[in-house]
Length: 186
Image (cartoon, rainbow, N blue to C red; front, side, top):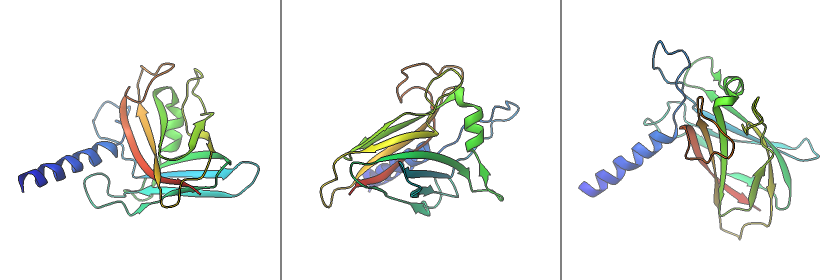
């Protein structure tokens, strides 16, 4: 019983640690900005055919389970233009956090990590110093997944105030949000 409690506690801590927001730049208080919703809009290159895949957990980490957690489904051997939007839907009206991330581009970077799915992410948009940001990017698919096989693509936003540099890996900075979207190419 004790081991089950420890495992459950560890899972809760892991989930809470991955769905967090940046601290506000106004240092007069330490209130965190909450990102409750991540929308990944993928438009097939050369078309207007767009699909948005969403992760939504409106009460934030540690509360109820996410109310929406889409599986990203893409066709093989295609190229997609990606746009990410971030929202705080725990308040009314919902706050669009995307413009803030764009304004603070020099302190933020998205990382995309596919596992067991043939997706390559490239051409991330950049900040004022030509370092990657990733609010927009290009996703290229290869061969289809085997029937019954679903991989994932982890989308991570890192906050790196004053220390973002060329070639940074995903371990540098504080994690604003990290979502492992189930993903399949078929």
